[in-house]
Amino acid sequence: LAVVAPATPMIEHEGPGALLTATLGSHESSEAHGPRILIVPHRANLRGAVEMGATPAHLPGLAPIDDHAARQRLSSLWQRPICADAGEEAAAMLGGVSALVVVADDPAANLLLPQRAAAALHRLDCLVVLDAYMTPTASLAEVVLPIPAPGEVDGTMTNLEGRVQTVAAAAPPPSGARAAWQALSDLMTAVGLPAHYTSPVEIRREIASAIP
Image (cartoon, rainbow, N blue to C red):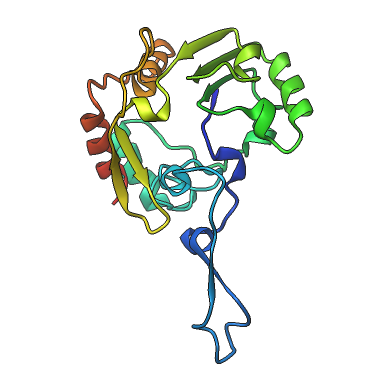
C-alpha cells in the first residue's frame, strides 16, 4: 500500500538548500554572495511536504533516511521499526504497487506522462482517492472519499522560508466531506496501523515531536 500526496512527484533535491536557493556563478568567485534565485514551486506548501518526509530519501525533518539516530528517534516515537531503504518517486511507485491511496492529487493529469500514469492506475488492484473534485485519477478509483477543498478546512502552510502559517477555513465544507486527516486515520486503523487522532492539534503535537 502506498500513498501519493501533492508535490510528491516533483521533489528531487539533496537538502533544504536545493529547495530554497541557487547561487548564480561560481562559489569560488568574489560574487558568491551576489544574486540568488528563489525557486517557486508549482504547488503550495511544497516545503511543508518535504519537511513531513514526502521524499524518497528523507525522513521527517529532512534527515537522510540512512541517519540511524533519526530512525531510532522516530522508531521510539511511533513504536515500530523505520525502514532504512529509500522509497520511490510517484511515477516509479505506480508500477511497483498493487494498491494506492491518492490524497488531493491527480497523477493521471499531473505526471510528465499522464497517459502512461493513467494506464498504470487502471492496472492497480485497488485505488482509493481522497479529493474535493472528481479528477481524472478519481474517475479511475474503486473508492472516492470526499474531503474539503483548501478553503474549507483549517490547517497550516509552510512557506519557502520555513515559516508555518495558520490557515483558517473561509467556508464550511459540503455535507459528507470529512477532513483528510480523519479519513486517513480510519484507513490506517483499518489496515492495522491504529491512528486514533481526535483533532488537528494532536497531529501538530506529533509533528513537533517528530521534527526536532
